[in-house]
Amino acid sequence: MLELPEVEVLRKDLEKEIVGKKVKDVIVQSASVVRPFHRNRPDFAKALEGHKIEGVRRRGKVLFIDLDEDDEGTAMTWVVDPGAQGTLHRETATADPGANAELVVTFTIGGAIHMSDEAKDPTSRSGVVPTEGSLEAAGLSADAMDPLDDNPTWMEFGHRLREWGKPLKAVLTDDALMLGLGDVYSDEILWEAGLRWDRQSETLSTQEVRRFYRAMQEVIAAAIKFRGSSLEDAEIDRAVDDEGEVSEHIKVFGRQGMPCYRCRNTLVRHRIRTRTYTHYCEQCQI
Picture (cartoon, one colour):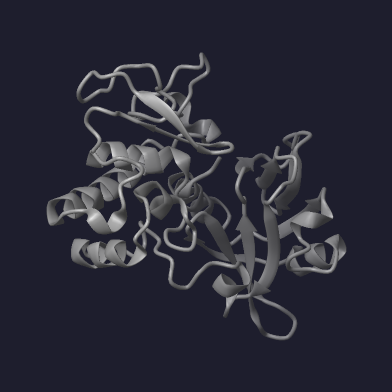
C-alpha cells in the first residue's frame, strides 16, 4: 500500500522525467477507475491523450499532474489516486502492465505510468478535471492536514490534537484529519514518539505533543530519504525485502514477536478491527 512518502518520491521522479512530455496512449482496463470523473473510458482517453505535462503536484497520496490548456483554454489536471490498496509504477513504454493493471499511460518520448490494484473491490481512480477546484474534485478534505506540505508549528499541531479528541492511530490514519498516512508510518511515528496507538489525542502533555510532532516530521523525512517502504526500485530499503525480512529503517511495523530496538521488549501486533492492525511496544509506548 502506498503512503505519503512513497508518493512524494514518485512525484519527484515524475517531475524530472515527464514534465514537458506529451501523453501518447491511454489504456483503461476497468471503467470504474474513471467513472467518478468521466462517463466512460473513451471520454477519459480523449481528455488526456495528446496533452503536454506542465507539472506534478501531490496532496496526501494523490498525484495532481497539471496539463496544458484544453480546446476551450481551461487549465486541466490529471488526478491519479491509488486508493486504499493501489500502487503506482514508473515503467518503460514497452513494459508488461500485468494482470492487475487498471490504467496504463505512455508518453511520446518514452516512459509510462502504470496504476495497479489487487483488491477485490479496487478503489483506485483517475480523471482529468479543471485545475481550479482539482483538490475538491479529488474528494480531499480542505480541513485535513498534509503532514509534509502544511508544516504547522508544534503549538498549532497541539491545538488540532486537542480539537480532534481521538485515539492517536485514528488521528494519523483518518483522511478527514491527516492526509496520506496509513498503517506503516502511523505505527512508525507512534513508536518513535513513545506513544500508544489508543492514547486520546487531547490527553497529551506539552512535552508529548512536541515529541509526537518531531517524530512525525523525522519519520516522514527518513522514509522519503530511503525511498519509502514499498517502491519497487527502493532496493534494500523496502519494508520487506526479497527474503521476507523487514528492512532496517522500519522499526516496528511487521516486527511483531521481535525485540524492540529501544527497550528489547517483544513487539506485539494488535487487531483494532477487521483487517486493521497496529504494531507497538507495550513496554516503552505509553
